Amino acid sequence: MPKLPTSRIGRTARFGSMVAGAAWKRDDPVAMADAIVKQLGQMKGAAMKIGQVLSTVDFDLVPEGEREAFKEKLAELRDQAPQVSFDQMEKVLRAELGGPVSDVFAEFDSTPVAAASIGQVYRARTHKGADVAVKVQYPGVAEAVETDLRNMNMLFPLVKRLAPGLDVKALGGELRERISEELDYELEAQNQRRVARVFRDHPHVRVPGVDTGLSTRRVLVTEFVEGEAFGKVKQRSEEERDRFGEIVYRFFWGLIANERLVAGDPHPGNYLLC
Image 1 (cartoon, rainbow, N blue to C red):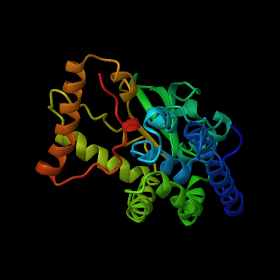
Image 2: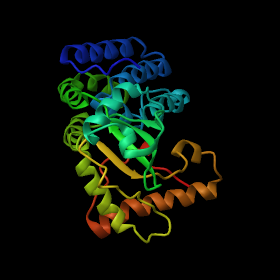
Image 3: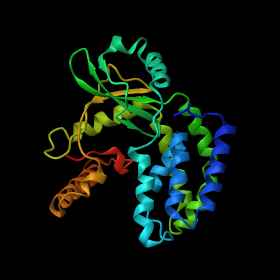
Image 4: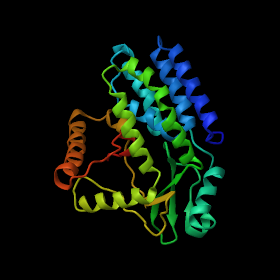
């Protein structure tokens, strides 16, 4: 993938081009979703976050026979997004870690295991032998997010036509508040440690531990955990799907009822099931 576009003019032009292109494809919902995914996936930042949120919305005006394919295409932004080259990401790692990656990690796989809206995740091994996930923020993404938040009203008329019942003003306000917090990985580490303490002895929920010694504002190092994405779980038996559904429900409701905490970014790409 080419260098992440960060200038206001460049990102505004891409936003406008995407909205216009998607509008032309309104008679072909899957082609429209494809146009949205290609552009938002390359833009990253708040632009891609909007797409991830939309992948969880029911679009009433998309024909029922095409609705599932439409949502599956948007869901690519959760776990199949375009990757930024390691050459670009390594600059962030060196700046945050204070030196070469090899000084901090015994092994580091330069192929990301996931590409998200704010950063990419890599698998590595510490010099102490621990397998860890290393989330690295995209270079320039903070500036890109600021521009996207100014531009996202360009997208909402299109969204409103497809999902008339969606409160786009409330959605925009929530995105503005939450995505600014997501840029601070130290805050994320603090929140993750708090939730991990809550579920420390839980039989069905596992929250990866945070390596505070290696984590910074733009790099988050946690325990590496493997599992299945939500999409694959749909292929399981009804009994297994029901069990997973109950666990997810108890996780979210348990945080609210017992701890007065709300998981603010609950889209399926943030969770693994096993």
